[in-house]
Length: 133
Image 1: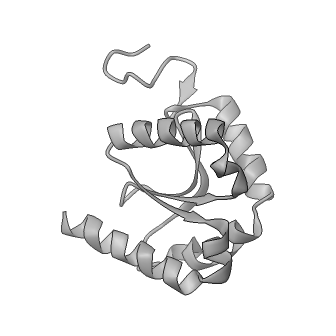
Image 2: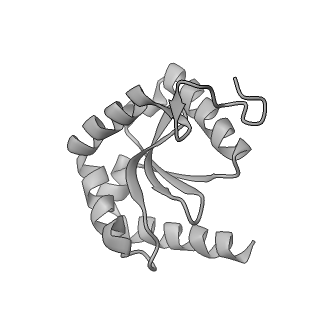
């Protein structure tokens, strides 16, 4: 374990294990309908010129969408996120990201599928607030 980077060890590449990169590739090839819909709004720098990556590895986790410039993660939660074990993992993920000064905004799949305009407005508000800091 590297003392300067408590979440980094020699088996990691760019802060993530090689297996995480392989898993991220699989997830990019099998996105949910909600992820596909949101990706259409984010890809190609469509959101105010910001570049988002989908299924982006960050240490031992994979963020649904990540903007490096903003240090912003967008997570989409399906039903399984209501499971107590998954809630524990989500909390662990948020703590790690917060430690790295990465902000997280979460939406349910239903929010994205049923009200994409409101979701996009909330993301833009988050970006505005991040730029105001």
